[in-house]
Amino acid sequence: MSNQSLTVCSNQTVNRPPDPPNDAVIFRGDGEPISPQLLSYRLASILDSVGITPDNYSKGGTISELESRFADILGKETSMFMPTGTLANHLAIRTLCGDKPRAIVQEQSHLYNDTGDCTTRLSGINLVPLAKDRPCFTVDDVKSIIHKSEDGRVSNRVGALLIESPVRRQMGQVMSFDDMNEVTSLCREHSIGTHLDGARLYMMSAASGIAIKKYCALFDTVYVSLYKYFGAPFGAILAGPHTIIDNMFHDRRMFGGGLAGAYPAAALALHGVEGFEQRFTQSIKKGRDLFTNLNLISGIEIKEFELGSNIFPLSFDSKIDIAKMAFELQERGIYIYPEEGSGRYRQLTVNTTILRQTNEHILRTFDETLRTL
Image 1 (cartoon, rainbow, N blue to C red):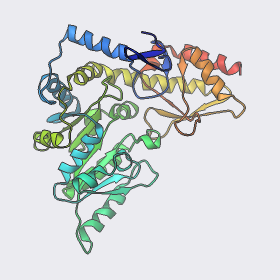
Image 2 (tube, rainbow, N blue to C red):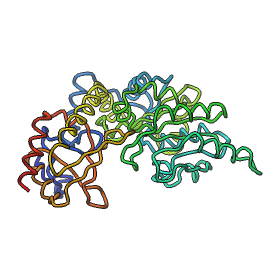
Image 3 (tube, rainbow, N blue to C red):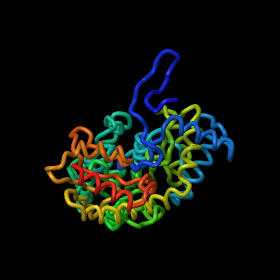
Image 4 (cartoon, rainbow, N blue to C red):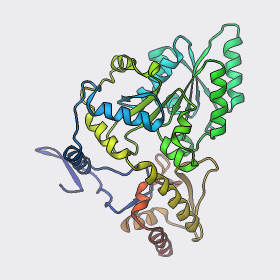
């Protein structure tokens, strides 16, 4: 099959850009791009090597293997497969809140901005957004809301608090571990459940050097994405204690999330998670070393947030034709991309494709390309 087209039926062809070559360094996304051909190859390879067992509406089979593996990785009693992160976050907040009608979230979080107010419309839970246009809130912010909610003229108790970290709307910036610890400790004092939207938990852990289990231990429940960087086409894991997770499959089914056959996604995620933590840690270190040297080249500047993850702010000299430079880099196996919406080249995102080429080669490619502009 040609890289330039994808046959979808006997008489229809959809044109698409060519896939990046297998040795390309791609400074976008948390994972490596996976073509339909590669996805199919991996599934066949997994089937031949370790086998794949079908599930029954997202229960049993390879799904159970996945859930057991991630419960161990995250240091939780158990975990449950969810088809989407949206559902994982929603059901976590719904269960933690119980009959308490409020949940604290970041104003910049996915749950507040990208889910159609699902917790309010479907579960009757009001989200209280804090830290407008900032990555995260402080313990004093949370204390103030708890006081207003519990001691107001009409008591509306807070049942849950969600922390998203890294925060994608803030270029992957993270909440510091100490701040997380303060906030979650306060919540325990007030019997408020805590949930970590850790869709990109592995990025945060690699950048901070703090172990995944150490982050997860602060929270009652944790969500991790399966498709953003483990190679699954969809899916999420929600982990926590048996008392919260065990019966959640009823709610999962009620909200339409009990997929009839999710085992292909589970098999690919199980394959993708093995060794990923070590590879991504290596990628972050390599990226930092590379950017230190790229900053020595005239015309380019790459910064790092004090509390960042795998996204690094990027800027170029105003005289540089950036679109032309991006084209020339792509011709030599390095892909940079403009920001969605603005078209500006504002960031480089590190993922494991950076391991495909030596830093010396990447540095030389940037240097030689900039000299030709």
